[in-house]
Image (cartoon, helix red, strand yellow):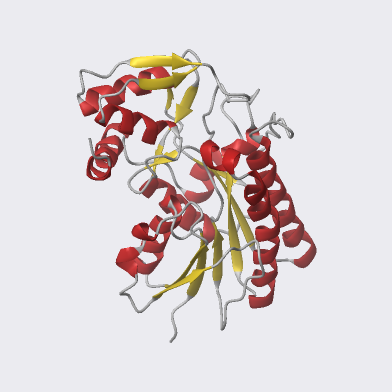
Length: 315
């Protein structure tokens, strides 16, 4: 009996590479696809020796062809950090729109189930806290962050249209802040920035007064939730993230204590445009539907992530 085959776009990225590991471990034949705009082959180098892994260097914003049968598609291709989508606004919009359209067409042709990676950014700077899946969001469509927010909102809309009109099997995961090994050091997000600055003995840069909140989910927990959602019979969006909330200032103090760099302090800078003040998922739906919640405590996850950053950040 042939193995089930899964296509993972954004396979050389942070979350995509961990998904490749998981599905190979679970006995799937994995096809990774990435244009390497923000992904790195270093994240999947260990997989190239495996018979059940293939890699296509391809931009999903252009026509996507995969020969033979295909059972599942996970669409995780996209610039995902502010520094990336502010630098590459057109590519960000195209991968969320044209890329998603291409993969929906492929899924329809292959009769494959498609799961798309949406984001907590669809909630914008939320007026509802914590954020539930039925909240429509507070997004500035023409602001600098709008290229990512609206790409993901369109991605959800066209996915639901294919589900309703064509009867396509689709799944939507709304991912909240996730961290772990293989994050890019210079991707501009708060955790890599803090770790890099602390390891180098630099001041940790806080934007605003540090009272804004985030919640951080370890990547292994997120991957487990994604797997459960893929095989669950539910087509509407599901939040996945850690509901344990922390201010950015307190988070900086945790990083400093872990790295133990007494030379480092905290410096404050102007808050970027449309930066959300609160971010915390309501995961009630994931709990009831998937029997899922985060298992890795932040102190444990940060220690594992610190080990990775120590190896890649050279003082």
